[in-house]
Image (tube, rainbow, N blue to C red):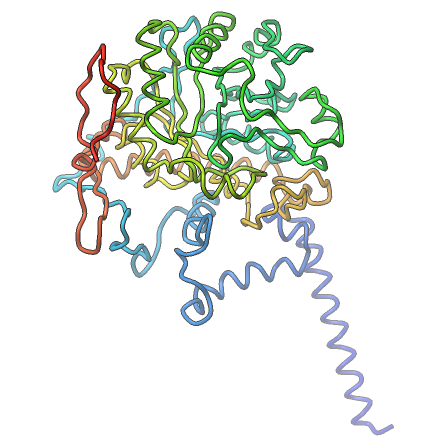
Length: 500
């Protein structure tokens, strides 16, 4: 064999050895680092995702969709959450990719004289249930929506709880009950009572006063879930593969079998029964009690408000969570997710105006939910009349969700919605808790930044005149003109109907 051939063999062998060493170093780096779940779960090849993401910034004009296309959340929204969760802020270069001519776009009305730093006033907390024995004083407007333990993993729940405690936001349990994990840190928790009443039911499936009292010693408030955005008229669903012995014990069901809640509460079939249940839970626990619902028209709202007027404020809910039809969940029938329930942009003003028309707005707090993940979304909801905003998928992005759409399969590649321990190891609680806290703090901060640009001292001063909605290219209308202020009528004789 010639000398040249020997040298070629030596060089190729050396390159192969060097490549193997580099791959081994990359492998060790990936499995030992704690910041990126994809790299921990898929060493070396997982790096390709981040490379393609960076390359996309330069080549998307040739090969990729516009960064504000794609559903259910576009690339621009996800990237914004990722950056804020990592503490990198919401800065960009060369201008916005927002299309200002798209109908429905939000344009906040800046003031010619924005607030100086010394003129800004910290956003005050707000009390939920001031008539209760144990009212809940909530310090932040943006909080964590319901995600059940079982639908999300143990590391994900631990990260959310620790992040919530660090950022002073509340966390909703979802309908899966109170897990031992919920008590590992001292965080503000709202307990959701789903149609199966997991965690607060007796052997017959009815509300248990004893269990309610026990849970009330841990949580700040109770929320009855009538319906949720992704599946109005369908109870909660947890696939059999995710019903582990631990989850089954918490819910009081059989391991390995699908957890399918009734499509409504068996003991709540009308507004009177709803208010009676609210009043009963409040009387037993002393805690604020409200409900979560998706709306299809004003009919239910008129019936509810008429019933409150007839029975008195002692029976009124302390809060109402308005969920939009665009809401998400771990598992839902596509036909319900696609075609049932009004969007939050239509249902939120409907609820606010109905309560105002009946003279109940000052007595009932309103929580907005449904694809509200950015500070601009939150500011819009406050302008519309919401007191608080909650998000689930926004906080999943903060945990590292890459929108792989596998929540119902127990195969989540980032470890957020799976009980597969191999995949869960990618989600390191200490790091993800910090990201949850960063995201919560940043959104609550930026809402005030928008308020200051509008000449307001803080976000609690937002009103409808502070935002305009694009109607068509080159034309926008004030939210105050689109939804004029409703005059309260304490004893309303005719049903509320918003003007066309």
